[in-house]
Image 1 (tube, rainbow, N blue to C red):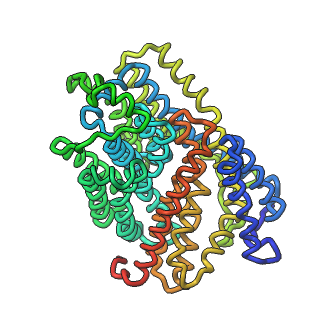
Image 2: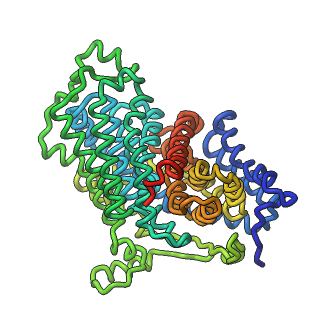
Image 3: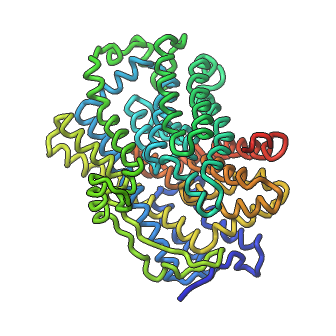
Length: 562
């Protein structure tokens, strides 16, 4: 039997219904920040609260609510959980094989300064991974690298989450922007142009903001030249590529330009003082700043060999995201190339799209049409599979025994059991929230802000990413609502759509999925509440910046709209 979503279930009152829709979200914040529950317990109980609200208040049939949760749980396992497992596995391989000691030394030879390491690894390298893969891989890999360099695990996770703000809108080869074209009818290129006239302001600011968080104003000024090179090279490239090339390449190009620009700059410029964390100061007072590890001379071949696992990861992930290879890996290739045709046949065998029983086409959405619901499992096309292949090749490059290879994989699986459980439950919570209509209720409430809607439009994206963990999902969830509301209040629809995506990037750092992924990557499962408390205030501050930019672009800066 079909069920029609009701967005105002409490006496047909939007405000009261919104308060009900907020219950699971408020509970989740309470569970983590005040009660300080372990992440997987907070995830399970939040899911239960969401199911109760969906069934008891929104009138969703219990069977449909449970099946929507199962759909989300499967998505939490693959592709998201699979990416985390393979990313941590690859990192552990480099540590066990001794290659990470050389990686660490190569970074230290470039700069021992923790501020500059954060710019290179968290900001630039993380942005590249976001552009190539997305879905948690950037934070997982870059945070693990920083921990290996000597960063405090919680600090490394927080820094990488905040740094990940700049590239999210164009992540995974532009999918968040491209996804909006279908439901809204506005060309992806036009949305790309508008996002490219918002995010560069944030991208130029994020490197400075990162260092301010780490060291304060005075120590930030000491590395201001490097901050400017890192931020402005990224922002300028992001603007040019998004406005003249499209949404697919801004992250990859911006990250590469920023990474190489800063690396080359550091060959000719060094800060007057080397910044280390307080916990390192005692050691630095006894031992010269140039540590024995940094002084160890490795050949270029040894450095290349040590970095090869991450170069392979980058190569495989990039290939996995390219057209027409990407559709072939999922069994959707329609061309005439013989090789891709062969890959396509394998992709078909390893891609499963199963209708969710009792849910598929049995919920009528806001547009009056039934909502499709599938368990979609892409074994070959998943980014995690690309990372696994990089790990398999790394086994031979690092001359790792089969025993060590398998034991490392099992070790990673055991360590990540509870984080993966949290990820699955919070994604299940997101699916229940969407299927029941709770997300739409909250969106409709913000859309009632009238003339102030241009200011609040980014909040919709922020809320969508917090709930779903994905800028793509948030754009699909609220894109049509943004367009319709914009037309009602006299706002350019393309500006509203861009605001949804740009606002969404600031919600990524507090998304339960992102929090769980970051903690899992640095070995802090169970301490998700600490990480959320660290990132929450920064998320709100950066969101306000996007709100102000959007409001101004709707008024005095309207000339910036394409």
